[in-house]
Image (tube, rainbow, N blue to C red; front, side):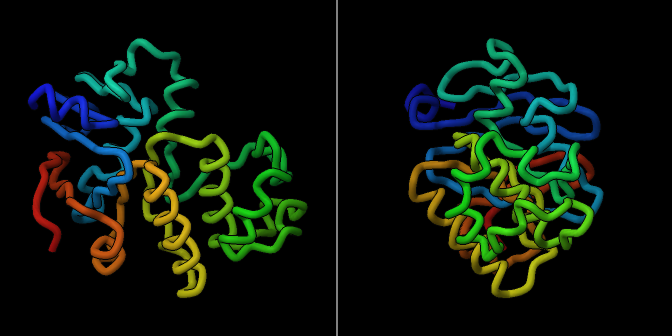
Length: 208
């Protein structure tokens, strides 16, 4: 990778080796979305978890030229936000998962969620409601990079459109994204390039 490419990239990855995942090189620019695709079980989620510093791995990952190893894990995970397909919830109170839930009311409404969902016990929320709230929770931290694992998989068409509209707005503001999705139409609308993952090996390919 040239010096000019490094300077233009927000996130760069080189020689990544983790549990069941390998990625030789990746550069992700501000406002760019790359699709991460491949068969189930190929290692797509493991790739995101490695970049988020949630699973041990070797190699080099840099954000704005600064190595992940130079930053405390909580700081890195705030800047590089990971939204899994099934988010974890450590409290039954939705508001406990936000630093300031009231500040996210507009985002929550934009995602097609009623304000009262913040007061609804997590076990009473639908899968789609939890999925959208997990996205809102990640966005509250204003990450520079979003790692999204099937963010629309459990959603109806209206909710999918709301999520896509919000993600598009994030891209326009300069947030970079890696998007795991089996939805080729969504990938075609939002993403610029594609990482194909097979048997743990990730390599860049043209979008289908």
